[in-house]
Image (cartoon, rainbow over all chains, first blue to last red; front, top):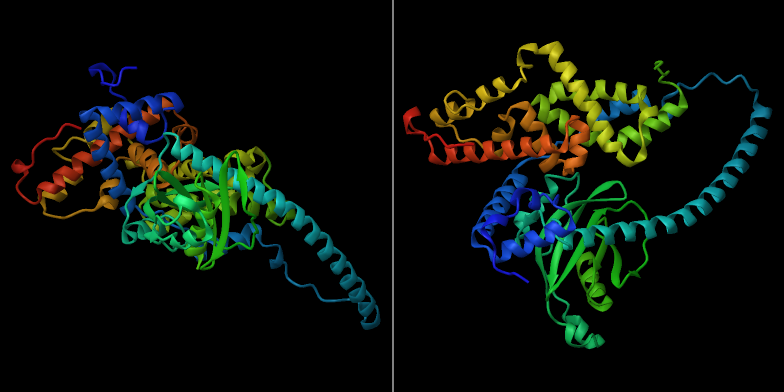
Length: 268
Length: 189
């Protein structure tokens, strides 16, 4: 295997950093950049430029008044004006009783449907989170803002999302020692940066932590009432959490106990 | 295609499913293209009307891209109605626009204004601004951008490279700070 860079195959750094090179070329590019001083300097400079730019460019959110106006025009079924009621009182009582029974049946049916569809939904969510994690670690863009400073990461995220997720710089997993997590326990998870991912159709904040040599992705989005269960997919551990009015989902190849400790600390 | 009646309950459902979730993305693009909140609202409103008219043509997979391409079309129509003078997109015009001698950025630097990334991006010619915003603010892939802007992927890549080179040049112009026109070196894009 040739490790020294050849002069003629410097990879396209911008395209690589955009995550658009494809698996094999991205892998080669990463190896080349690690060994080539010129490309590594270019790559550092481009990364720094983009981090700075991304930190400064706002993603403008639609003003609430505009959303309200458009919803009223196109989306609001409740906006139908009430019609004068031609039904006399006794008949209305019967109708109301019937309607109440009907709604109870509807509520029961919808909760059953929601229960089953939410189970499918969190499996989909866990799989989507794992896909995002694998994509990022395999030569994709691991962090869009690389920083261990929460005063850099937090504003970067809140400028791009309509919420501001809590960002912890360093999370101790020391409590694990007592729980017998063996030689993996005790080391802290350190913030490495963040990126934005799309999970099940919505943009979510992804906090990237390092635990020894492992990468831990923590997805955070406002609590929407959904439920997740801890699971393991293809050897990766997926751990849900809830706290600070947010839903959390941690994905990594570290052992489950470390991930549990991280989630407990983050959602506390 | 016939106009739909806005009171049709199917339309309400369609709006909530396909348009409402992407209103922020729609507004963001419109805001960057028009460069002001008021016009952005007009463009988004027009885009929503069109989206409802063409909602048969949408597929779940690319709902955001679909919405953004409608916003973009609505914007260019708005532009041709309101500011037809700005609609000079042939390559000569672009080259002229990026000549350091007379570009607004260099002029601003000459006047000693300090401009931030927002202003630098806002000052980019439209063709470059739209791909840069779609890539770096909206986080879309080259393929999605190619679909929205309706050009080949290679064109997306070259416009993106050009946009970034212009930003780099403008940022370095800015770093040199205020001074006479002659003290501003020409940096190749």
